Amino acid sequence: MERLRFATVWLGGCAGCHMSFLDLDEFLLELAGRIDLVYSPIADVKIYPADVDVCLVEGAICNVDHVELIHQVRARTRVVVSFGDCAVTGNVPSLRNVLGAKNADDVLQRAYIEAAETNAVKPALDGILPPLLPRVLPVRALIKVDHFLPGCPPPADRIKAILLHVLDGAPALTGSQLKFG
Image (tube, rainbow, N blue to C red):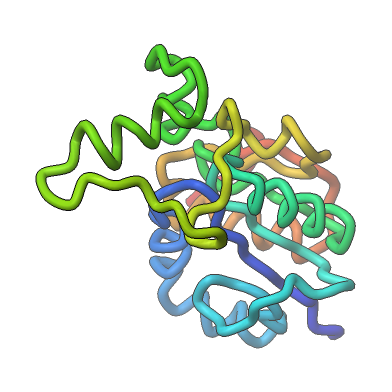
């Protein structure tokens, strides 16, 4: 059996989906026998590679770095899975869209100046903080997504079900169409 090139990406979110992924426990050993992990926040790889078979994308698109990365993911990946509610809907990161902020700078002003207890200053050096987008977006707003796996975070049994489905080359499904247990 040919090993699949597998990736996970973490955009704007809490990493809870990756923690739930690690809750796959002994299935991770079976998975390791079927994949080559080529990119992930749990691996020390800095550039998203070419020819990825499957990528789980966690998190919403919040800044210009996320925009660049998600376009690389789509261009270089056969199957993209929107992994968790932040990736599927924008979820918690998109709360800033409805908080009355006129622009992304209002968010930074509130976080770094108004809410600061000490050292009230916004990061100003280039490269320290990527420019925020005016609005937080779900992954599907910028690229075609092949599978949607909702949940905050999705439980390990759902992750396992969609991974087995995708690894076996089955057609696109949403999380609600999968069989669990």
